[in-house]
Length: 232
Image 1: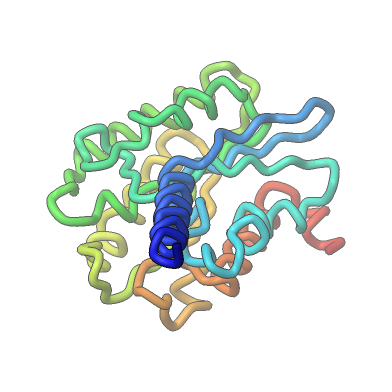
Image 2: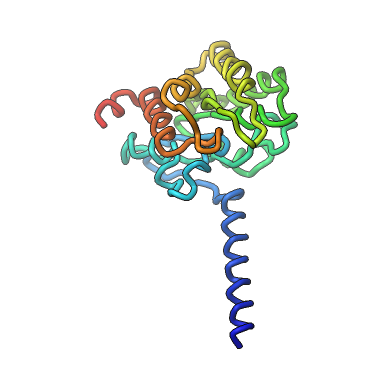
């Protein structure tokens, strides 16, 4: 009997781990609430909150901390997905997931786009494609005339084992985001500059911890609701 109990317990643990892994890669789609100023945070694992997963991403990711800074009249929808690239030819394109269409259908009042770290990973990088597709994505969110679209540079990257080139992030991705924002007349939030000045390291070289997420949340709050951020 103890043998069968041990097998059952092992199976339960394995199924629990598998379920947690699925939820990590495929979280439930956020749903807008009526009567709120909605903020759609579009991004990769640094939006999702992979760097604070064990601590609790629903409290410590940058969108979660942003929600607390903005207050109850706002709803921050976390559309971040792990590993995603902006480029459609990347290994895990954001556009290929249900979050992409769901975030567009939400027609949020404010849209924050921060994609690019994974585009600098491995063989994903194509500067021309990235620039063109970033502009196209921003225009899609702006097309309805309702959403205020903000472009965010990705955070600074440090040496890492995940294949992300810190040089490409610094010298190509971030400058392209700045250039596209200027060309389209969109507001820019320079997360790269904020984290380069305020962060000396990430735990794994890539992902924002709770403190770095706080810096990003404060920078975003100051840009989209300056009066509110000063109150808090």
